[in-house]
Length: 83
Image (cartoon, rainbow, N blue to C red; front, top):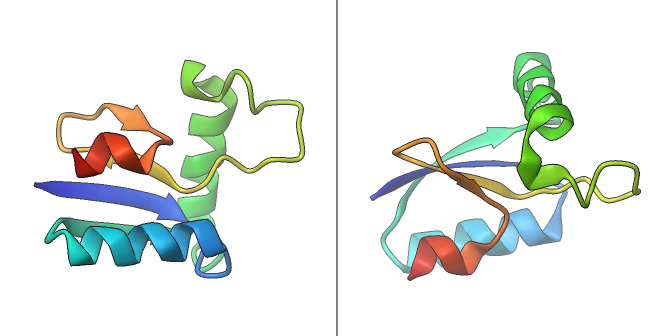
């Protein structure tokens, strides 16, 4: 399985998730929102429009890491990817 991980190299939750995915043998394409302006723009579009972020919008939470499965479904829960 391959998953896209949208997050930040400065976020402990993102780093933890990447380590867990590696340990589980999951191929991860890491999209770092702080290293690439285009990735940040794409992430902000998702965050502002996806129902996945309804509870996060308007708070101080960023909502990362975000996991995008090969079929395009998104989750904020690492357990959904590791099962």
